[in-house]
Length: 171
Image (cartoon, rainbow, N blue to C red; front, side, top):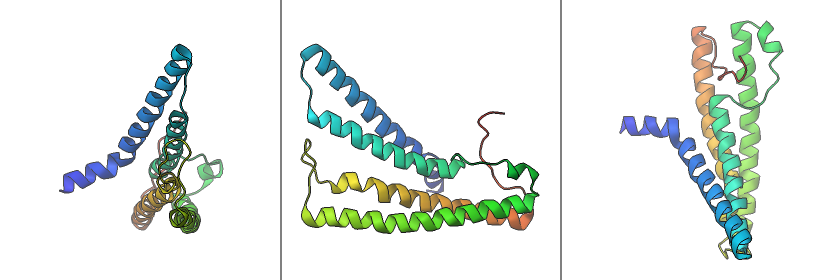
């Protein structure tokens, strides 16, 4: 069970991103063929692509939190000590955590309004709740990853080790 949870912790976002990316590309391919070969397109294909992209973006944002891959200006980080750098990362994660908690609250309210009024998508005729859930799900994943990051940073800070800064893109 521990191996399964460890694998899920490492790869949950990757598998979700792969699913939504394949769904997006596959649907887009089918729609292009239908439009160009058969001169016919559907509204459901456009909706699947749109909502897959939205889920892709929010889950990708949570994955970027885990890897510390969000865009940041880190010029000052090169001049700070290990402990000051850790404190700055902790402060940044705490601010991001506060924003994520507020975003979950307000985005979930939108989901509840959609649930209450029973709104459906135009093409698929599926409840909009499933599509609006992308935002609170994405921010909830971010909260989970931020808590993991904070715990890791506090442990590194207490032991005097340098904090995890993510992989460098251009080194």
